[in-house]
Image (tube, rainbow, N blue to C red; front, side):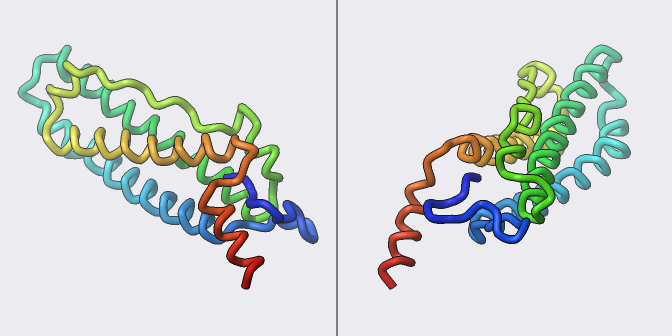
Length: 161
């Protein structure tokens, strides 16, 4: 999430935050936490009942796919918490852009194992992939030096009025 043109990165020890980007990250954080809670509840309780009739190898494959869901969600939470720390002035934007704080890669689904999953498990997996892709777009944008076109237009309008 780079700062927009004309923004001062630090003012009095706090980061000047683009309110639109902050709201977007806050909404994604809430969505991520809800999805993580739903996935935890489902994978802890219901998945075992629903995969009971599968052979042991298929159950292991389904379990691996559920771990991939968890991995995607944890990567997203970590990235979003990093940017919350930037918003709070706890770390600087440059530190948030360091390679160790970038979004972790999304593990690829195994199509055969994905097909074995019960419908709700597949829906959770698909939702985690979609959420990770949206956070990845923000991560890529945060690593770019140039401000977004929308931010540039917003800055020009603010200067004109």
